[in-house]
Amino acid sequence: MTGGLRIVVTGLIAQHPLGGVTWDYIQYPLGLARMGHDVWYLEDSGEWPYDIHGSGGRASAVHDCRQNLEHLQSVMARMGLADRWMFRCPIGSAWFGLPDAQRRAVLDSADLLINVSGTLNRPEEYRSVARLAYIDSDPVFTQVKIASGAGRFPGRVGQHDVHFSFGERLADVDEPDVPRTCFDWQPTRQPIVLSEWEPAETTRPTFTTVFNWASYRAESFNGRKYGQKYMEFDRFIDLPRRVAPTRLELAVKGVQRRRKPTAPIERLRRHGWHVVSPEVVCPDLDSYRDYIASSRGEWSVAKHGYVVGQAGWFSCRSACYLAAGRPVVVQDTGFSDVLPVGEGIVAFRTLDEAVDALADVESKYERHSRSARAIAEEYFDSDRVLGDLIDRAMQSTS
Image (tube, rainbow, N blue to C red):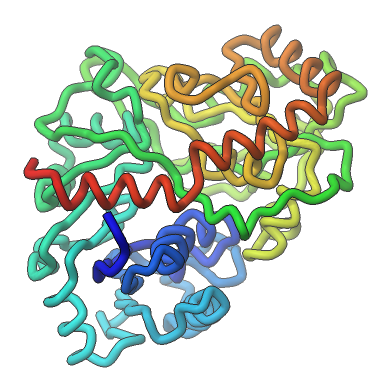
């Protein structure tokens, strides 16, 4: 489908003013705008924003949304999308950005709303848009919550006309690994605006990753548990000793969060991991991109739920590493059935496989680096990913 559609994209750029989160969402409107679409960014999650300084505090410690707004304004202006955003602050439910009349006019005339990560609080309020598309960026957990009948969540998902998922193998996965839902999940993946991620010379001989020890509590369904990254990480905690002198670094927060396990920083260091704070090394757009581009590559585990479900999820962050020409050595979540692996992307399931994968990348680094960028160009280019998404969203009658 050619350009020219009026498209509204949702996200959490203001709510989570962090480098990685910003890149996850901004590449949707940025990529669509560069394709020639009339793009508008909308943020109306109904959730308290996080502290702009990255302390992880809830908005109960923030008296207004001013700093979050400043972050959003800065990002949108930098990407050439100034004055093309609308943000509803949950503190008082006040709207910012477009004036009310113009906001209503945009929504009433929009051809498509892409609800990335299901961030809209009440999608039923946006039914004036011709088509609503839901992007499930957290497969397995999404399907478990729907099957469990968790609160308003199934109804919110049901407000959309078409449903996409980063779980590209959902149609091939049988219960009980992933519960069935009444929705037809069409495969999609993270779009990467490749011109923002040009490969450069690596400056550090270090494999890195940026992650949350636990993003939220584990989910359970029919006696099966779907947990967070820390449940997988322990199986690989001795990896640094096995691959020395290869250096492994974790940009992970060690702050205790309510009902969430905290990263055991000192224990990780005793096992040979180099641990840094993401709030220091990659808090914003530039530092996040620089952190990835200066790395030797990425090594990371996945959430336990993704590993259990094997639905084909692939990390937005890992896609950025690929675009920067950095090989990724990552735990297989079923993506090896939909993406090329072996060069550029090296998948592992066991500690021994992780050791062998890192050794292979080190021994053929330039080849893996070229393959990483080539995979990004073929599989994650925003023109291809978003073009396919829009075609299916506008043609689907599901």
